[in-house]
Length: 309
Ligand code: SF4
Image (cartoon, rainbow, N blue to C red; front, side, top):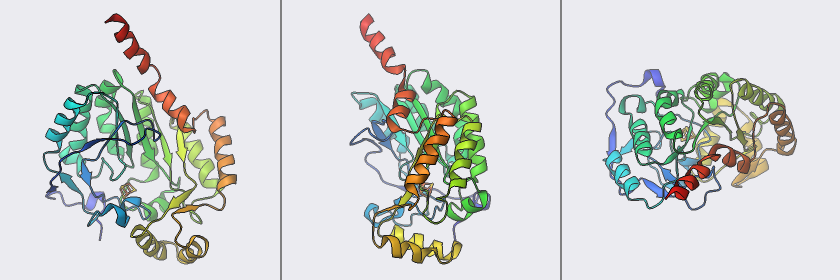
């Protein structure tokens, strides 16, 4: 059974796994304009029932057990130092960089210090309010490079969040984290994904999330009205659906079969409502607009330095 944050054994001994590289070049920059990807931890204990990282194709054994890469900070330092080009380093794609162990181990925090020292930018995705601990470093990075913080919120309802993201902070706590970030002047917003068909793909959920995002200072929301399912992940998801939402599994099987992309039957209407609400609250929601906004000003700075050379 997965332990919740406050049940977590304080004497937990971190397991280390060997690693050759940690900061790798991204194949394309269409996802929030990131240039590099960094995963310090392997596995995640937030227990999200829909987590894509459980898929067989990633071959992560014991996914719910968090492990860290041996000599992670030394490897990151060497890799950043050797990069010919700086850029934005993204983290949070395969595991949450602010898992409960980060409180004690501070590896994400120290990697941000390195990102700052070597003049890179940062793009962080998390479901944890622990990100607010590192506002001081994010401010330092922001002084020279773009920073974007993406808080994932899939439902405004803490009761549903407890079922679908059992060990992550409640949605209400994540909204508070968003507020702290934006009040500190950090460019922050929401990832609204996945929006699970037959569970949270309804107007009430979408309208409330956008409204609360606006209230807590979100600069952007990037959505996906559906979920992706692959071998390994699908079986885990269906088992949890049986426990938390009896009867829904059959609706998935009937509608989607073995499909990878499981788009909500309401996706068109939900997107229309979502876009309308975002416009109302002056929140960006198109990827190109979000990238342009959080990187605004930094290109000019580089050009100016070049001009003086
Ligand atoms: S926080 Fe992210 S990586 Fe962790 S279980 Fe949830 S979806 Fe997976």
